[in-house]
Image (cartoon, rainbow, N blue to C red; front, side, top):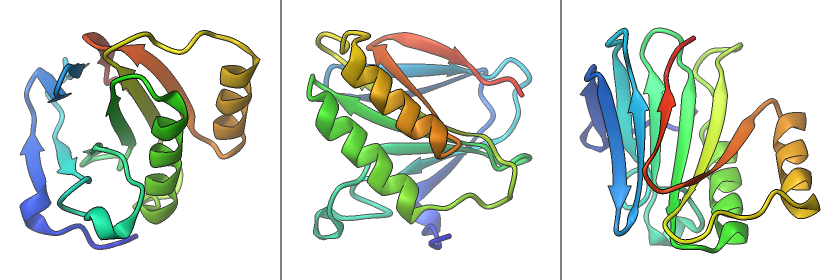
Length: 143
């Protein structure tokens, strides 16, 4: 795994962990108040010169589970590309760690059509679940 610079990481154990940018936002509920590393990927771990990357990564301290987040206005193809590229560069710290991707849209969330199903299948074949969300949705962090 690439070494993540310390200044890109914020340790969080809040009951709610929020990522937001422009008009997109996702909230992770952390009822057990476990410790997570909130990592600023875009503009900190990777810069514009590094190419496509997602916005944030939330990583469990205990299990090394990874939750990749891309906050978008509406371009689902670009969001998927950014998530894939980042996951390819940042491998799991521990084998068996859960990996999930969240494409969060401030506009319309992509329809559940054959294109979206193909994307979900492609991620699943790589051992990763992908969720397409509208801004403001909440996901509970339970193992």
